[in-house]
Length: 261
Image (cartoon, rainbow, N blue to C red):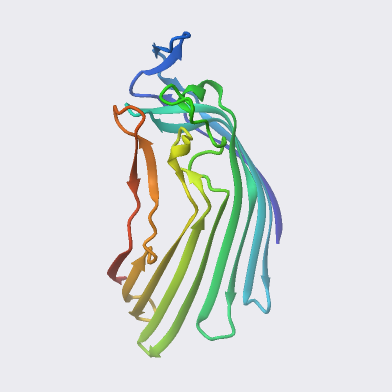
């Protein structure tokens, strides 16, 4: 199946709960902005893709290309003092994605993978520019690029699942997966000190349960390689030129028992 689509939509505007300030004058004087409103966000989305089932219905292959154009993109920014929703005049996200799944000749073993390339760039900052690096705190740190925060160029996932019956009432399941992201900025102001490097996360799960899924007992591990990475980096509250961060979970183990009734 091949398809082409166009869609548009919007997110309502609103009001910030506190007044923002802007820099005016050659000496960097701060002037309060008494208009706390921000406009609605709109988007136009274009997509072209194919969906296919191959190899006697054992292989599924999907691919698409897309282009999304945002106007007045609503970006929530922490300034080190307060949260501000700023209206970024123009943002565009374009790229391609591919995903596949394969029921292998080995009974019970299936493999799946997907990869996405997305170039998500601010093309017009508009009145929100003063909220982005470089700023008065350290004008020597220019932006590395204008790519939106939390928008890696490349992301992907791969997984393997094995399911085998042990008896008429018991089934064994195993799954291992890895999720990959290329580098991206975790700061909404695109400060280069908030850049998170590329990383991959390995997760695994082993379980016993009923074939119909009525009950399952699983042991699992997340971030098995104990990868150190930032969830988000931000300006330290009321601290000059200091960056703090929330770290993601380290290697984690657990047991899950679930039932359906």
